Image (tube, rainbow, N blue to C red; front, side, top):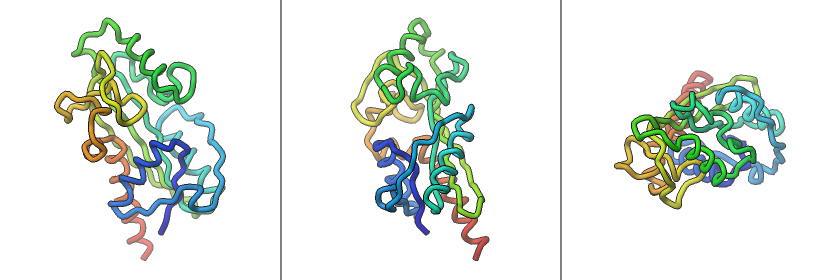
Length: 202
């Protein structure tokens, strides 16, 4: 079975495909499936709600089982912000530099031990029969005092994962990032749920 991938973010799309293909989940972009997807307004107040909204929208428009995710950064000192507003934290959707600048400003006087944070990803698969599966993954770490690295996207240049020898997420290779990322953890759990559903249907 092939699944539609509901995202217009090219960097995220590449990461999702890179993670899903080796674990046996074949995904198609809207273009590859010959479908046109409209942007879904992310009105949810949780990552779960937004992931479901996007997967439902893609499934309804295409008639195909659809995988979508919603992800973001939670900073403990900021009571979980930016959270679901991570992509538009500074007011302009998808402006990574402005979002990071605002984050660093809000943490300006916070010492290293108070800069704990995590990346969160919730992945959802919606099927045409109405069944939906969700899975959540996290990556614990802290916020750096300045940007390092030139890979990845979003807050990667200022996020130091606990499992990365002090390097930022943006300093890791694709394989190193995928090994510890919140997105991989969520997608691997989702893939297992998809496999279990398949076995139960047979």
